Length: 124
Image 1 (cartoon, helix red, strand yellow):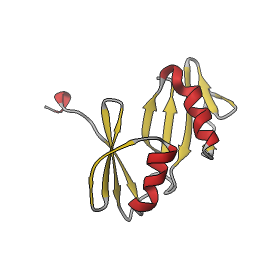
Image 2 (cartoon, rainbow, N blue to C red):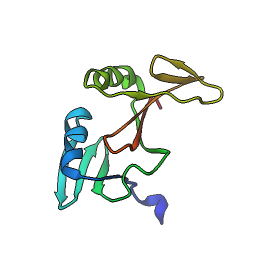
Image 3 (tube, rainbow, N blue to C red):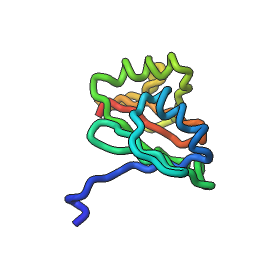
Image 4 (cartoon, rainbow, N blue to C red):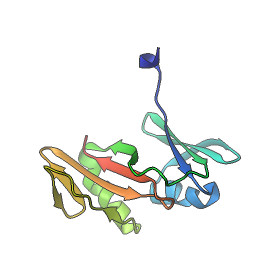
């Protein structure tokens, strides 16, 4: 059954060669095996699949999230230092502290990859 399987996030990009520097240098992901138009990355105990698609960047919702715990602020700072621009949303019941959305104990930030895919980092 699915309850026993591992889940892998998948993110479409228009051009894998152009997307790789963002995922490898900016996000610091470790490339694993790949083939024409497809690249797997190690992230924690999971895998992120980045693949070429003409539909890249058309999703208007979060594509992938990272739970960082206490590492949220250092990662946020590192990404800002690499030129990542953070998105600001108007979420009911939350407030914005710099680039971090805060709602109770939840702290989260969103940014986009070069194709417009929405990526989330949070303290979950």
